[in-house]
Figure (cartoon, rainbow, N blue to C red):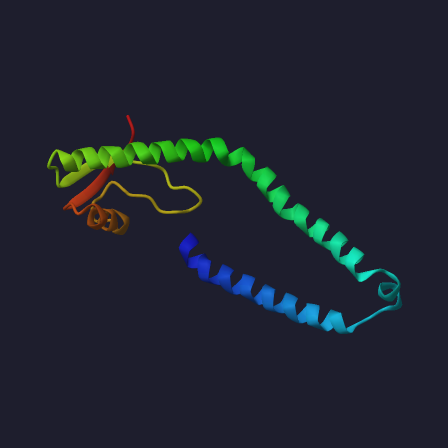
Length: 135
């Protein structure tokens, strides 16, 4: 579902960027008396400083998610090691630990016929991959 929304989000962001550029061009031609009295460099610096706070705020809010994503990365690395160990043992039909999807991104499923499982099997050059819930 998230992948289906990606094209729409790209279109939205591109449209907003174009709209912002056009609005900026329009406002650049408009010179009210207040702006003529203010130094342009000072006004630009103030607007840039205000605009810089939003990414900093977003970064600050995302700090809360770091432990969850770190645990997810460790589980993912453990599963990759498990897959490589099974392949090294000569296995071609793999049964691995199931992980939950994050942010709507699809994960491998119980059945080897699921498209994500088939893609993973092609990537690892094995016959099939299926998952089992963690013990």
